[in-house]
Length: 292
Ligand SMILES: Cc1cc2nc3c(=O)[nH]c(=O)nc-3n(C[C@H](O)[C@H](O)[C@H](O)COP(=O)(O)OP(=O)(O)OC[C@H]3O[C@@H](n4cnc5c(N)ncnc54)[C@H](O)[C@@H]3O)c2cc1C
Image (tube, rainbow, N blue to C red; front, side):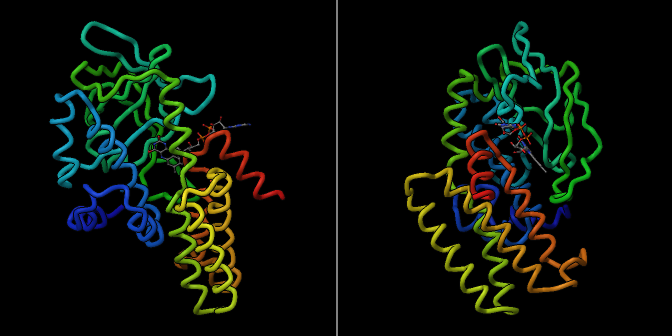
C-alpha cells in the first residue's frame, strides 16, 4: 500500500471520520485495499474513544485521529467457537498474551493494534504497539484479493500488556451480543463495489447496468431503512456485489482477465466481502442466498 494513499485519506480528515456510509461506499468502490486498511484503523479509534482508561486513550487517540498514527485490530478469532487462539494470562499489574491471531491487517503500516484476548469468560482488548517485544508476525499472507492490505498471522510470545494498556475488559457473552448486532448490519462496502461495477457496466451494456443498479438501490434502501431480516439483506448485498462484478467481467470479455483490468479486481474484492466479518448466521444466510 503506497503511503501516499494513506496520506491522502489522512489529509482529507478521514482518519477521524468513521461511520459515514457514503464515505465507506465511495472508498470501497475505488480501492478495496485502501478502504480495508482505513476501516481497520477505525476499530481502535472507536474502542479507545469509548475507553474509560485515560492512560491508553490519551496516549493513542489524538495521534490516531490526527493521522499521525495508523491503527489496526485483531479480534476475528473471538468468533471461532471453542477455540481460544489468543489468551490473556493475568499477572501482577497486567496480562501476558499467548497464542496467535489468524488475521492482522496493516502489518508494517500501522503503529498500534487493538488486540482481543480471552481471559476465562472475559475478553480484554489491549493496545499493542507494532514495535513491542514479544510479537511474532508471519510473512505477509499470499491472498487472492486484498494483497496490499499487508495481512499477517501474529503470534504472541510472552507479550506483556500493562493495566495501563487495557482499552476495555468485558464479559465474553456481552462481546458476542454486540458482535451479533454489528455483523447483522448492512455492509456499505458491498454497495460501493456494486456501484462501481454498474457504473463501468453502463458503458458496455446500459440495459444490464440499469437492471443491476435498480436492484442495488432497492437492496440498499431496505438495508439502510432498517427493514426486518437484516442478516438476509446483508447476504443479498454480498451476493449482489459478486453478481455485479461478474456481469462486468462478462460484458468486458477476455480483457477482464488481465491483471490490470478493474473488473477482475472488483470480482476478487466482492468475494472477499462475502467472508469478511463472517458469523455463523451470516454464513448460513449467504449460503441460503446462493443456493435458492
Ligand atoms: C484478507 C483478510 C484480512 C483480514 N483482516 C483482519 C484484521 O485485520 N483483523 C481481524 O480481526 N480480522 C481480520 N480478518 C478476519 C475476517 O473478518 C474473517 O475472515 C472472518 O471473521 C471469518 O473468519 P475465518 O475465516 O477465520 O472463519 P471462522 O472464524 O473459522 O468462521 C467464521 C464464522 O463462521 C462460522 N462457521 C465456520 N465454519 C462453520 C461451519 N462448518 N458451520 C457453521 N458455522 C461455521 C463460525 O462459527 C464463525 O462464526 C481478515 C480476513 C481476511 C481474509
